Length: 178
Picture 1: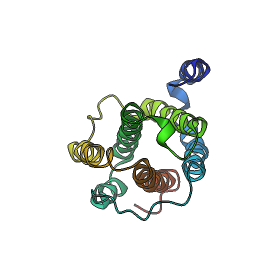
Picture 2: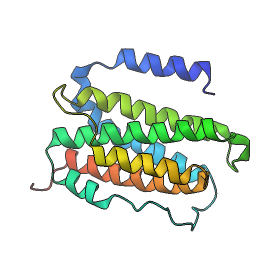
Picture 3: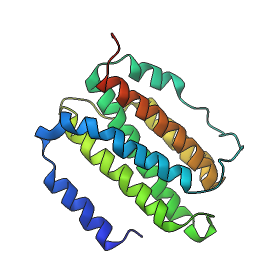
Picture 4: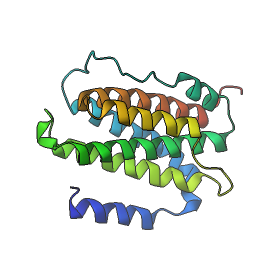
């Protein structure tokens, strides 16, 4: 389980950051995003060659890239929430000891995702609707069909999502003519 220090640190970050810092925060997102990507890369050995039983939702990312910034931020918020959920389910489902990589990196990774989610949530206007049903369905199917398969597969798929979300944020910060 996550250490006490980890939990208090998350609480502290939540208290210190106010909504006014939203746009400034987006500029820091790249840093956090790089952090979670490097953690997921060093977490295990080379990525598995095993193919995911659920095809990657390219069309959802395509739609997000062409959407309004508010939709993009909501997509980012929901994706991070769903990735977090997937990994927490993984923790409950499987003893970490069966994993070739250590718990420290995994906890650190989860904390980075939690922090990204918490901070982006502040940027989304209250009117923005809840998670896209297709996105939720994709993650639920992924969870059902990969939990019994392997940690390595989920690690590989998560890395792909984080890279896509990283590019989405880059496009919000530096919009090429929309």
